Every structure is written in C-alpha cells, then in structure tokens.
Length: 470
Image (tube, rainbow, N blue to C red; front, side, top):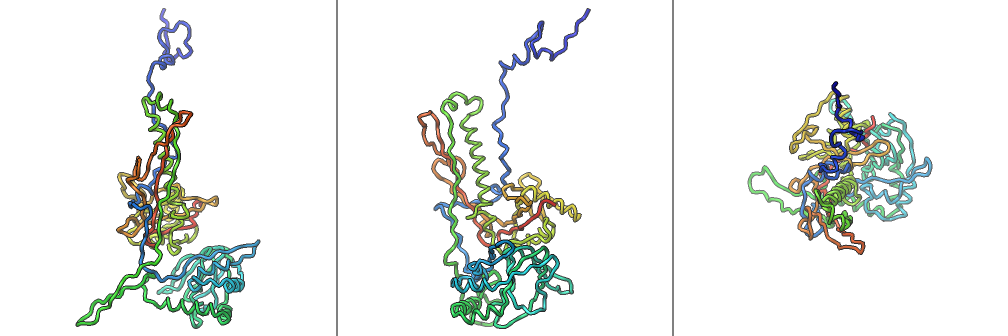
C-alpha cells in the first residue's frame, strides 16, 4: 500500500511531518529587501530640464534694456452681490494712467464707469463704428476679431477677466473708429466709460492734463516693436552719409531674484544609527527620502511661488486664453506664437496632457514624439511636452500650460542656485550636523537653495483657463 504526501501541507506543523516547515525555516533565512519606497517622488522634469546659473552672491540681477511701455496690466474689481465696480487705484493699469496717483481724480473716474451685461453671441463693439468708450472686462470671455484681407474674419485673440480695450482712444486728440469687433463668447459683465466723460474730467483736472501730456511725450520717443529704446542703424547707404550715434539704455531699477530656501530638520536616534545599519544604512535612507521631499517642494515653489514662481512671473502680454475651453491644436499653435524664438518645451499637468490627447483625437491630429535622454516624449510641432503635477488644477477642472525658452545665451528661463556651500551634499543642498540631544537624538539641518528667473518677457508663455474635464 502506498501513501501519497502532498507538498505544502505543513503550514500548521501537522503531526507526523517529515521535514522542517517553510515558516520555521524563514527564521534562519536572510530576506531580500528594497530600499524605502516613496509615492510622492515624481519625475521632476522642470528641475532636470532648466539650465542652472551659479549665484555666488545669493542674488541674481536681470539687467534689461530700458522699456518705454507704460502699462498693459490687468484691472481688478470689487463686487457687492451682482454689482461690480472697479478699484480706483487699479485704473493705473491702463497705459495712459500708469503712475497717476491723484486718488480723488481716480475715484471720480472709477465712479463714472457704467456696468453692462452681455449674453453669449452679443456684439459689444463693431468694426467701423465710432470708438467712443473704454471697456473693462470684469467677468467672462470675449472674442476679438477683424475682417481679414480676403473678407474672412481674422481672430485677434480672447479677452477675459481683467482685460480691457479702447484705452487708446483716451489719449487720442480726436475720436476715431473701431478697427475690430468684440463679441461675447460667454455671459459677460463689463464696465464702460464714455470718452466724452473722460475728457470732461480732464478739463477740470490740471494734474490729469499734465499727466496726459507727459504720457504723449514719452510715447513719442523712438522704440522698437518690443517697447525697448531704439538703436538707430544705417544700412544700404552709398557715399559718405553721417552715421547715427547710438547707445543702449538700461532699466534704472532692474529686477533682482534672491535665492529662496527649503529646509527641514532630520532626526535619527543614535541607537537606530548604531544597531540597525545592515544591510542598509538607516541615516542614508532617512536622508535620501528627506532630500526627495525637499526637491519636490523645490519644484512646487518654482512653479507656484508668488515671488519667483513661473505661473506668477509670466508677462501679462504672454498669457493667452483658450478659444473654447479645452486645449485644442489651435490653442497650442497660439501658445507657440508667444514663444516663437527657439521654444524648449511645454509643461502641463498630466490631466491637461490627457485633455490635449483627447482634443487631438477629436480633430484627427496625431502628434509626434521626440527622444529626450532615451525617453519617448510626446511633442507638438517638434516641441516636447513634459508632465508636471505641481501645476495646479482647480476644483472646476481648470489648469494652465506653460511654454518656455531656456538658457542664459537664449535669454530664456533659468534656474538659480549656489554651489560650493558649506557641508554641501548635492549641488546647492547642504546637510549640516546640529548635535545630539539629551535624549540621544541626532539632528541634521537639510537646506536647499534655489530660485528661477525669466530673463526677457517673451521667454515664457502661459495658456490659461484650460478646461480638462471635457
């Protein structure tokens, strides 16, 4: 008679077992371990792709040529229920009123704006009609277009919250006509000021008249298409004409970027460091995870910090809006037009990249991919698209897409750091021993120094109000 014995039935150490059980055998075995894992670690493409400039003095100054542009900002409002009014001081964002500080005049001027509501599809102003008002967009989205060369409408862009139009008529000596048409895309609330009322207030305010005269004098100075002081150059001449003498003037108060810091204190008990270091060093693993968390915070700050973060430091003229909400191929082409000089890469939240793919599929467009250090990265018009989960997504499912040119030689976006600091563990990151407490706990100060700078305004463009939930 033969009795069969099935393997694997010894888990409970049954009576009469013939060999050592696997659970008991594991007590004498050495397990194979992984290093501590951390879900919060991301690819951090922004930190990997930005060129880094050494900031030996802790501050980086961006010197630029002198610019005569006097305004072109966005206007802010206050609302009480359904009533909206412009903040008087915010009228200084209009080019004509930039630098005008007479609070009484601005307050009276703000009170003369009338609130108007428009439904989607309604026309606010029409090309060829008298340009007799300045309009501030309090809420909503409007399209701006004019008739093209062959009779078809040519899109001039999208206006949204804080934008305005018609301000050129304020400084014009005579009334002109609109050379574009503005139509509401969504329900809109705007504030309008008739030009005639502005001129009546100007006649009663000598301070405002003097300010307007100074504005016209500044606007008459020679400048190039970017608003910088012009450099006269003679070309194509014959004979011996007198050549123009030139110099490039600089900004009187250039922007300075100070290095920011992210810090934390790592604490490790001496008993742990002494006794539990095989097969992995406990201090090294604790330090590795701490540095990963600091680098994640560094990338978050370089995107979102209000002082130097890229989302807050893009020039207002470099911010554009989507035509219909989701990121279409046309929107990305419009974004490429803002940073057309050697764009380096696009940066978007992973959900925004998924929204782009949906719109590409809907349009029957199949973007290519490019090889970046062995990675196959999706691209649009040859510009790679990298994910960055530090770009915020609002509760309404709205995000932004960044496009940038990089490098000092290209006058682009650069990262700032300081290498060679005391107790440096990684470039611009130090680990400094702080001592041992009475509880036998060792403390290490971990510090990372960094910032970011946009060297010229057209180095960074942002596609705003990107709807990713469609």
